[in-house]
Image (cartoon, rainbow, N blue to C red; front, side, top):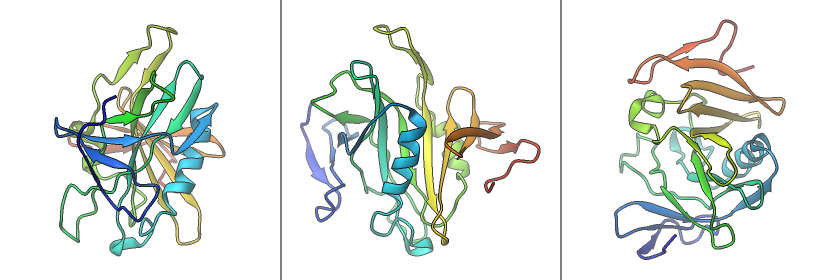
Length: 209
């Protein structure tokens, strides 16, 4: 990926490496974390890392961070990009973060972007906008022609409880299923029922175990 443009974000945070490209989209460097043999391992590690960033768990006074997660067929491994702290709204009441769309990783030029990642400082649930059609990354499912592997694109969200537990949730853009990371596995807990982002929870499932 090219790197024309200029850098934005918090220069004092070494984990923030983001720039606005000439086409208006955000690009982040990579990788910040990885390689991971399994996507679940990436999710667990990224949750711990991103929810410990400055302000990421400060409740209503906190702020969001965004990133990308991706797969390298040549290395058969998953990676987390560096972070973006660019807001989509200047309102102090609205917690927001603009998702990057490309990654600059010279060591993994075959990177397949699997989706976006963001933190919530004040809410363990996906917002309706998170689950709405506006966030779906198309194509929602694709085939890597080099390996024949099929990938679904998803949105990850992390939240750290006051007690210290890190909650990780995944919204699959193809199946519309929302899952939670429980004991190292992604466990389905609900399904998005319309384009507005309403969710129908499965029997006995909730945002907390």
